[in-house]
Image (cartoon, rainbow, N blue to C red; front, side, top):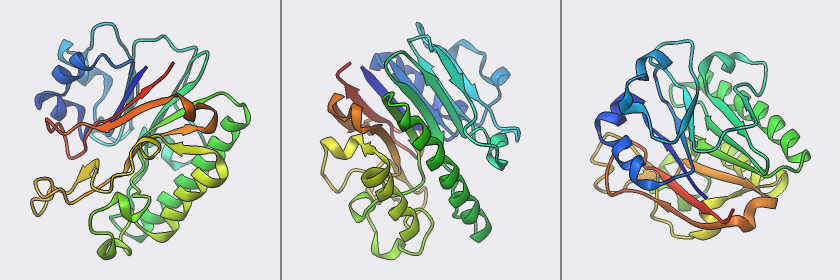
Length: 255
């Protein structure tokens, strides 16, 4: 089973850059997208469709902002677009599709880079999400949590870690929260389970020729519950083509 996650930085923009042409060749079972930035009626054209897939969206109330999607070859038993009653419900940051043997999430964490107030809201989002994940884990159904977490976990996940320790996305409290997810709550970083390399990233700033110099951050994840960890076969980041400022993260599972 192949699962792809990517922050598309605008689904219409990434489509023009060849994303859907590439996706047609991947034969993925599930494709999770973040920051789609489009209403349903804006992506009704066939160029946004994938033969054999159904598409499920959670759209932000604010036009051209946020939004998540899941393309799937498999009909879900249930769909959720809410995990807490908070201000984030209007921002289209979460969607879950449930199946017999597992559930799949596409989530887009807020960025705190615009200032202290937004960073506080990011922490609020993290708190709500943590409570929700704990409840799901208690149900013992395997879980795959795909998305742009806007957090680089360790210094191995960011090129310039020393100079970014006071910047949102690499703050100590954020990184400690990621460690808690793994060590205490019961999620595993699927990529790190299979790859220990330190120079593989999923996001690059558009400034300073960061992409060509590979000055990046690994902030996109597929986190899985402990009871699904043994299903991880391989994990990789696709960089042969550039569809947005993020690269697709691909994980194959033995299921």
